[in-house]
Image (tube, rainbow, N blue to C red):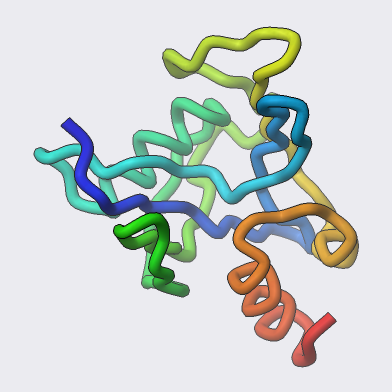
Length: 136
């Protein structure tokens, strides 16, 4: 059973950030990898499980980067590092893919994320400030 807490990974390596490219109900956007915390999980374990399911990569979860209220719950964002599996990103989890509802893991240049529909925008902007020293 899921709690009302979500946990997401901020993974930056060599000027690129790991994102999930989404299409859902006609909308196309990007999100940081992650998902809902299960009753028997810590947010850090959720991040590791979800990143593995959504990208095939194994990560180590670091410090909390941000926290945001979201739909009556909370979204926690953690700085993470890839331990293995960064080469060929692929979905390995139970999510069903259709023509109109799909997920695609991608490495994107940090310099271009200001031009993406990346949710949440506030966390995107915090990342840009941290990486480049000013809001983009």
